[in-house]
Amino acid sequence: MTAERRRPRSAGPWTPRDVPDLTGRTFAVTGGNAGIGYFSCEHLAGAGAAVVLLARDPGRADAAAAALRERVRGADVVTVPLDLADLESVASAAAALVRIGRLDGLIHNAAVVHPGRARRTTRQGFELAVGTNHLGHFALTALAWPALAATRGSRVVPVGSVITRRTAFGPDDVDDLMSERSYRGKRAYARSKHAVQCFGFELDRRLRAAAADVHAVVAHPGLGLDAASPLRAGVNEPSPAARAAAGLLAPVAQGKHRGAWAAVRAATDPEAVGGRYYGPSRGGTGLPVAKRPPTADTDPLRGARLWTLSERLTGVAFPLPAHPG
Image 1 (tube, rainbow, N blue to C red):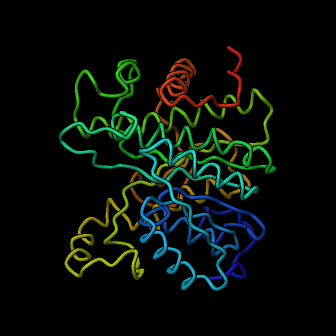
Image 2: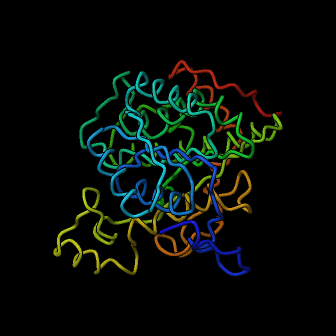
Image 3: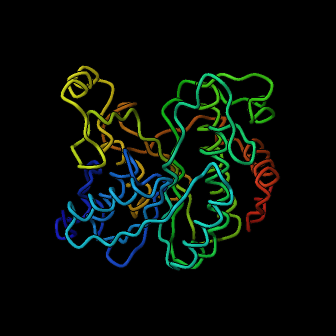
């Protein structure tokens, strides 16, 4: 896979071959060591980008970097430790991004998908799913802001979830963001992903109000399965039985290499303007297209409340003013 395989953007549906030449650009992907995060890195590196692979486990990060270099000749990839469930680790990772200097895109891919039947917390005491999926990314973006602001046309890509198409995000979800009143693992995960998307649209409003040349484009990957994804030594090695089981879900799910397409399009498509929302064309599967986001996630009042709460909880002040009104 090399940048020479790029082609001019056609008038038809967007495909991975429409990723422009990214030579000279730098993209950071959280959770880039596995699944959708790894395949996002592979797509970006294949188009010539330098990739910063942010991951919690150094050994898995190194294995993913090795797989990238094997798949993409001359891949420029560095690894940076990041545990989104620890704000001290978040601050260290953000400092590393600032030192790198250029940051054309920051993809918020990493996530706790199954927080467990019993409520668990991050190092700072936040409910695990919200603390990792939303608050960790919120703080990372704010602290890495100097690199984003210094890079013309940079993008932030919060990665939501198809579960938000089937669950509500009401005022009570913001009031009880930490699931302290009641806890269910699936509800906590859904709440965290609504918060991710709500933050993305609020970030877009504030960026436009500040006339900043940084853009927030939200994406969701649909339903992605490791077992339906290509083999990558040390990264993805599904058994034959797992592949057979994944084949039965083909009508509603896809491999994580395809699940990466929505975030890659959001991060790289010149036509992907701030505030847009990309997801698979058929709900859980298909090429990424512009979709209508859940109405509650685009509510300015809810977005402002979530923003204020996120700053208070993390202790990280985002260097952007509130949007007018």
